Image 1 (cartoon, helix red, strand yellow):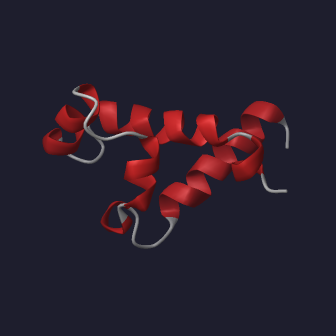
Image 2 (cartoon, helix red, strand yellow):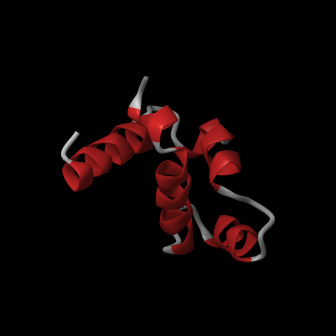
Length: 68
């Protein structure tokens, strides 16, 4: 198993928090605030992370937090 399948809620919350900080622009932030977009939706938006940097950062943050 991967850490993504072990704790998918962490990763959804992680990207939602980034969106709420405005990292993806005001339109995405507003949609998350209104409940129109959720973590899984954001991960599916390849244009937010064309090079996979968010994926890498989320994994690093998870590993640092939980010692994986």
